[in-house]
Image (tube, rainbow, N blue to C red):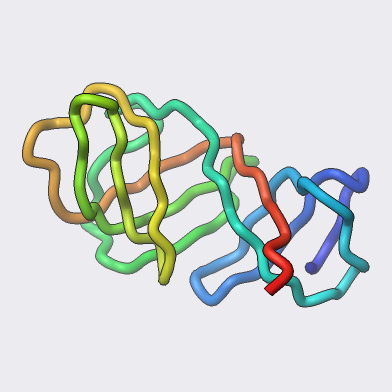
Length: 121
């Protein structure tokens, strides 16, 4: 943990970038190294807050107070709107409306809805 603001939002570092999110659970001490689960808890709309990108490297960053990520598409289940992506070493499930059929490659998304959970590993 790098910075705690208002004892709710935390800034964190990962091998693929720096992010912030809402902490759920007992707060760690400032400077602790803690394993976390990142939950991107948003309903995405294609072309609005998620789209394809030419980038081909997973990353996270904070830009204009939004959590920005680049991830590789694994699959899309049209029936339930679940876009499965690989973000670094993690598999992430996103709720996305209006995804183009046959989606492949890499996507870039932006959101404010990031929750962090300690995994106590």
